[in-house]
Image (cartoon, rainbow, N blue to C red; front, side, top):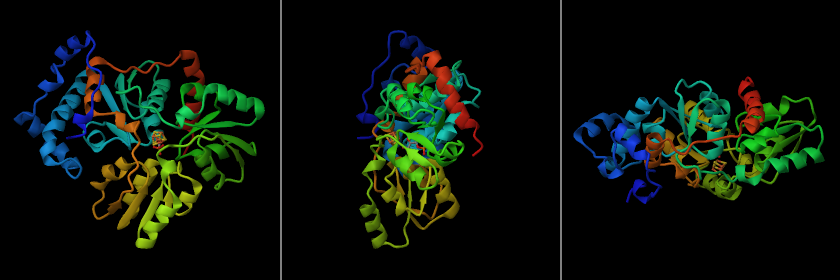
Length: 359
Ligand code: 13P
Ligand code: SF4
């Protein structure tokens, strides 16, 4: 059974058939692995051959082929987060990156349709920055435990409790929360954003561990919230030390959503793209990525000679995005991300201040 076989998703609405006809893909079962599809996707298979057995490629290839054709006809750009599965990251994405890169790229793409392969807050961020464009997410249920940990009403209460204290909000939040925010941050710029304020005290919410990791790198007093990433909170310092004990040469690199005790045993900590660049630049012989599983799979083929040790924690929300759902998005223009314009205007300011920060 392949990953694609395990997925059932809502099929076409009535109007969809017209779209399917127009773009020449009638029904999923009609997607065939023809000699032309095999030939035209062969170079893409080379990028994922370590992760998808050759015998399974005929299941993936027709989707890859159809998505790449239809996205051009539609005038759509596919933005994918570093945690997307290899067939999305390597075979259909136009742009892949961390949260900050995707937010920046969303402002630069020429296409009128953006398909966000990631979780809902990422698609919402793209929409905020491109209100005139159509932003689609292949599965609107792709959430995030951090984003769900806090509401706009919670932030208003915090502001009443700490009047005048700048509010720095992690980009992993809803538009409602961003609308109550002074400046957003991502894991790659959180320290710089907190330090950009004159105030000695900063509310850095909702990721408690990110805030604690920021607090270690600044003299400012950092107040936070009890939100956690359900993927990164599972790593422990003990398990990492056991790896180190078994092989003292192993390099451990971790995402700042991990507990500070975990980050303390890491050789490097940074955003998902920061971690990728670290591996590409330093080429450690053995490396353990303390983050979501797909990251290692995605970069393995790009860094020969590096052995990846994978304590695999999956993000179930990121994994809701699949090739069949991306194809449905393109055919039927689903699921469209909509943000109340009044909320969007306020939320956009916080995101733009972050995007424009020089770091
Ligand atoms: P990055 O900003 O590092 O890509 O992280 C986003 C995320 O959701 C990590 O869990
Ligand atoms: Fe949210 Fe964690 Fe998944 Fe990132 S890995 S999207 S922070 S739940």
